[in-house]
Length: 181
Image (cartoon, rainbow, N blue to C red; front, side, top):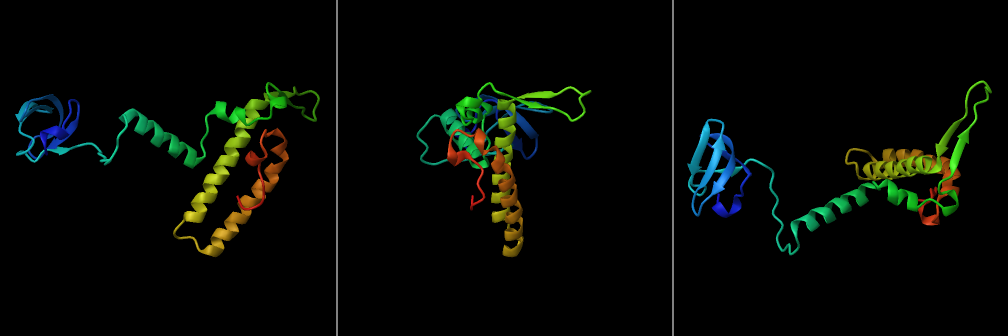
């Protein structure tokens, strides 16, 4: 391993000393704290290896934190996970700060009041989970096409049941619909 690949705090594996943490770096050597104590080793001649997962991205010309942030945002978008604030932006403005009342048939019991933002968030999360389930079914390697179609029909019926709540959405594109999602 080249000395340039090391950084202070990095976990490494040595064939004789086991796993350790890089403490200091010199031009040709590294001080590494192993369980039995501090050792000075030459990374290039000691068969030292990283003990943590590594990734190499060639041609990256941006700060690492931007790269990580953009990657995380892409994953979140792909999985259909949204922040609560972005979910509420999809709620029609006439429903903002609204409340939903559930009255039990038994008048001796108290009604339940729920903020519409909370209810709407749960509806959107259900929609997103259905979309993820749909993607997993469609990309599943062991399911036959007939099994995929059968499961897709259940999801379509779920979308159909959820169209009742389309009135809450600001944009028609965000609503539940029973056509091919």
